[in-house]
Image (cartoon, rainbow, N blue to C red):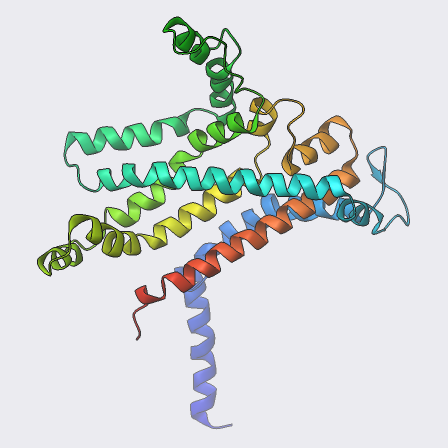
Length: 305
């Protein structure tokens, strides 16, 4: 071995030691990765593992590794109907959220000064209240004859009989749309507020109208925010059990509600874990499809290097 090689080895070792001590490379992320592994990954893996064993009085029975629980879930027609309902509710609520969030984010990108601050406070303030509290607020609003909505409509003479909205899919969609609206607005704010206005000016100078410029320039530029917001809202809507359980009533169940009932009410952790595996697995597939389609739609934004 030559002298140059022997002198290079200590330098290489010193460079790695120096990186560790100075916090270079991936080392600053190690505490966060350890935290996620201990408090997020490990509990999820443990929960999913319960779907492949039999539990007896909270203990894993010896030699109880089985696929019976997963097979029972995958062959149950009711589970697949609930999966479809969960997907339908999440897809419709996410679409409604996008329709309502886009004008707010677009208006935020045009206002200045105190109006921009007030609009931002109005967007973020619902997040300061628990989703459970907001769901109970919708029960008060959408309740029976004594609900605020029916009382207002009956007192003004617009209707003769109280509307039956609570304990229906419409109530679930209303609650999910309002509660998850900030999660769609915030990604759109980040994209629309920082977009390059010169493209819009060029479109207008070339003879395009305001409507054509909006749909052919502004909307394509905001696609990254749309994809991010759509994936985020779909995930939280698909896996939410509080809103369907409270606003949908006892007869309106989704896959997430079934996971809750099997683990907390029935105490059948094995079946609940199998349902949770199906819930998280199908949610992961849906998010993967959304991000894949979004990546294809935003290929124009990639700058070759």
